[in-house]
Image (cartoon, rainbow, N blue to C red; front, side, top):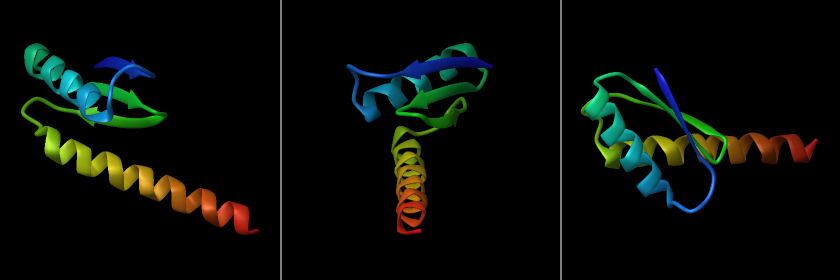
Length: 71
């Protein structure tokens, strides 16, 4: 599995698109790290679905931080 880490310069959609294209070309899953959120991108994954999953993980992360800060 190849790991791609995206830090700055690309939008989330651009980063996930690049990871999806890499997975399609190589035929193996790609681990994409976008803003400290880890995504596993497989061959034939749709970018729209990857964006939804990213936002779900991001929202969960924010909720967890909010709960921690309330204590």
